[in-house]
Amino acid sequence: MGAAEATLVFVAGVLAGTINTVVGSGTLVTFPTLLFFGYPPVVANVSNTVGLVAGGLTGSWGYRHELRGAGATLRRWAPMSLLGGVVGAVLLLVLDPAAFRTVVPVLIGLGVLLVAVGPRLTAWATARRGTAVPATEEHSRRRALVLLAGIFGTAVYGGYFGAAQGVILMGLLTTLTSEGLQRLNGIKNVLSTIVNAVAALTFVVVAPDQVDWLVAGLIALGALVGGLLGSRVGRRLPPAVLRAVIITIGLVAIVRMVWFG
Image (cartoon, rainbow, N blue to C red; front, side, top):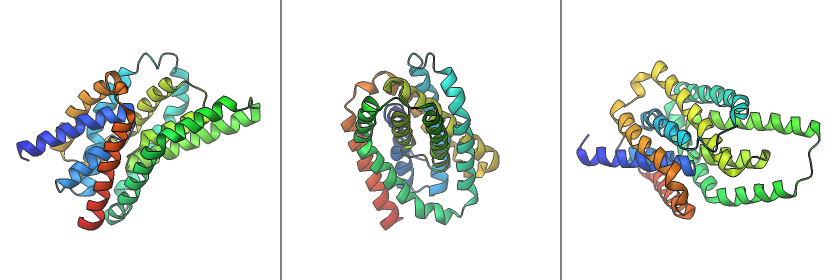
């Protein structure tokens, strides 16, 4: 790896760590970057997942004030993220790599779409919460079960690929809970970090040959910085600018994989 490539991978890690903390789509920066430099899709995905754990830790720590009093909520939801992350990671390893190459453009496209419609989804969910009638006990239980199932499904997706995992989570949490948005963003960071961490551990234990440690290390160093930036400075950046960058990179990745892969 040359100096220019190493620098760009590190910068991609910084951007991904920042974007994951603020929006939740950092993989759409790092994964296409690794594909551009010729890394196989599965190796790129595995190494990226391992590296981004560091950014999740600093991003979650940066939201520690918003997370005060959320311990009971996290204890209810975190097991679903843990189990789903393991399932998604195992699926990535046991399914034919050709299937991953086929489905990744679709997953990136889904991530790009979710990033694009994320603000409208959040606005709709916020308006819906503001006009909703009080729920009955039975309805509350049903909604809690739907929420747990949704967190598990999102975690499976996150363990398998992960792009826009945070966007999916925020749409889910804002729709089905009454917590404030800043606290939900902090919870989203914790749950996403759990998914990435257990998926990364699964990869390291089961398929260490799929981890490019130099790439993972560069992304980790960048993501450490990015997580802090995202929790402090990134929230002041125009969300539209971040979304535009993510969408552009995602579309370029799709074109490269479909027509030049």
